[in-house]
Picture 1 (cartoon, rainbow, N blue to C red):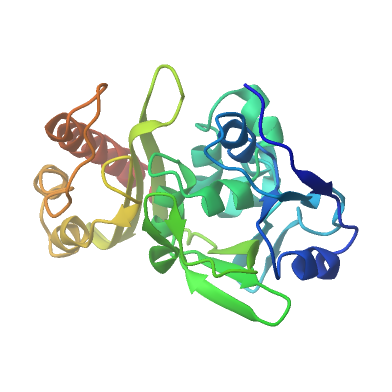
Picture 2: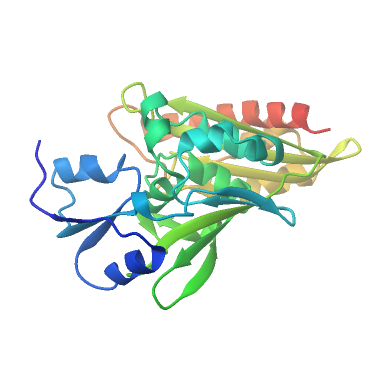
Length: 281
């Protein structure tokens, strides 16, 4: 399929890119793994495409003061293989390794993925579980939004007109933490039928902190605070996993009914939590 005609601009600086986003029907092109298929299907028909590929300093991965900062143009492959992320935020590296295939991971970007906010994307589960902060910048503003507030509905985020994702800040995992990402991949698309990101922090023989991020089950990724509270109050992993998704209206399609998705979420939450606990020192 062929997209409708559009203008193409490749700004050289972030300021130039932000100025272009101030008016008109423009779409940002990062890796293109989401936008280009939508344009070919004519589900998106922007008047102009703004390519960020020539804007410098948007793909860096750095650590400072207990926070790892990942540029919006960092590819999934860079996130998966970064020594900094693998050592300091292993949950994010593990999640990136589950995205698509080799070709997608080499081209697709973190910023493009989270801005697209597919309800079956992998990153959102990890970002809400890791309590990440997403930086949004426009020509006139610079603000930070918690991941839990960023993903609002299917393909809907808190990005305002004229804004773009610049980077994602993820707290470093503590030495007493363990984490794991478990996923049931759709055989055709590679997206998550259900994905579970689990973090556990131990204190002696008890679970002092639990975070459970869920993707694929509902309209957007979410933290299952009910299951988290059960674990932190001393309940078993089996009992906590058994309530995952209880408050959500599950997605249902030709591949998996809502009830089956909820069942998968609970099975894989239990598996992810067991592995996360085993990795906690």
